[in-house]
Length: 296
Image 1: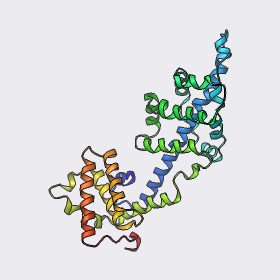
Image 2: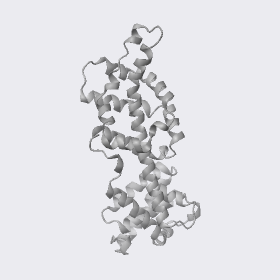
Image 3: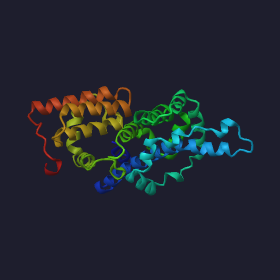
Image 4: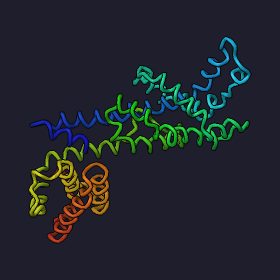
């Protein structure tokens, strides 16, 4: 969807160039995911740095000498830092080059005052459940709602607003199964293949899609319909016709959700109405015979 939308501003884009743009979107998402986890580990590890800084004061107080560093030794944290594909991703993406030090310090000091953090360090024992819960709290409930952190991400990652929901799910999935996660392939080969095929089919079969969409627009001026709505309907039609593993109802529901999330307030209902009418027509005329677009 993002790739097709970006192509609207370009004329006569060849498919090979479009596929490169799509691949770039995958890479941008990976860079963002790596940075989010890097930042999370930096927050957790700052507990140790805070201890060193406070104990090295000219006249440290007893409180300064006894800073709790439990978070810096979090078992899941070190599982992340020692995960092979994550270490490789850090070398490739170099997230440390982004100016983050002062923000990490400020956010850690805020975190230190939260009830959740105080409860965590108040427990002497380390339990896997608690180790994971504190990192989940820091990411989901402390960092993501923080305006300063959000502004920081928006400054360095133009895809943050579009990818935020997906990133939250990916981080959650990673924290649940860190050893099985591969940062060199955050999107499976099957899903990446589907994305490339869907992009190619929308570009190749634009005429076919528009022949089905235009008659359903009735009194709507096609030029005045939101660009994103047209793209979503073209994608939906291509799934109807060329992707046999996807049930039509699933297609319609997915594009309703995308329209609601990314387009206008009325887009969900509009896209639903058009795609539903096209689907009913295809079934009625016995044209709902899915074939691979490459063979059609």
